[in-house]
Length: 68
Length: 406
Image: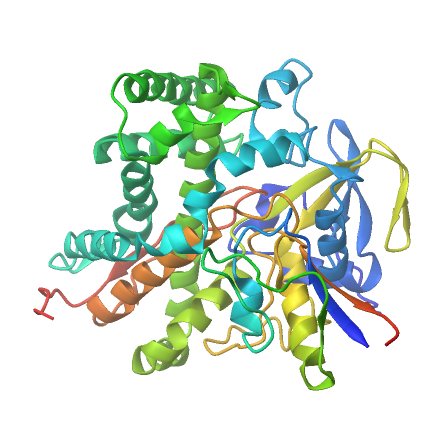
């Protein structure tokens, strides 16, 4: 299973992830990532998640594979 | 693999006259994406031209440091300690502590609040030329907007914003255009002005960026006047030239492509945001930023030694056919456009990117809708610089008009 995570010490609220893939990347009221630490990526949104991760100018987003 | 070996010279400002050297870039990406480049009077540098490698080095600040300067030419040992008090010469965590002082003011929410003010400034600037029927688009129109915006942001008079901008021009000019004395005089003049602002804002605080920066603390300490001046200088320098050259070069690109310009006018609502991104990609006003390897490492197929200069060429990355379809084509409707015009991601990613987008959008809208029959009316002149790409003069004519009430 593919999971996505944000490193909040790096998130600066540029909002690019949400601009590129709003269906997967939500923002909070301050414009910071609301992704959390371990969000499962449905197979149908894998491409969107990858595009969002690549778009982050701060390199704050990441994907990882994990069992279960 | 391309068999035609280009003459490679990314050091010479002449290579950037009339735009990015697309042929050199293509050859480098295909044949030597991390290329050892000779440098007159110095040891040389690695030129990085492929998208993935530019991004890789930008993100990895633990290997690729800013602390030796961000120009491909060297900073003298005498100047370095002074300049290291400026955010651009810092690495995390010190860099982060400084960036956090102002980052909120530049992020999408804060920047969006300025949209109407910036749109009104762009309209006022265009109104200043529209009845004349001709102008220099760089000096009379696009160059004015960033100085007005910085004045508004800092809470200083607009005339002072224009003055700061003129000093920026001198500081960024090529070595053959100004003497070292002139450049140093401009730097000192700007730092002197910043010191006056510092004192004035502490004595009489306002609701502006210059005041917030004067009152902000790093590790419980306010910035001393020297660091404050360098911080302000960085904000002024980084925001002035870049927007002017993005727009000056961008309009020039559009003027040479009548069909693209017509389409943009006809479908402005949909195409304006896409065109701004395409101008950022195609124009890439910032040609390079340099890092210095702190340890031995490998980038692409090359062994990099500790102390080597690693120079990232954003215009080359932004023409990488591995990422962009038909990269040499300028498309007003390009959708998949993850350009690196604001830097290759990582801690030094352009803090002003959202302001830059707002300014570019407002000014482009004004120029394409309010200056009917806009035509190039003479040979444009280009900056002779291997750092900043853009025209220094773009003479244009258009049908004189007055603004119609909305």
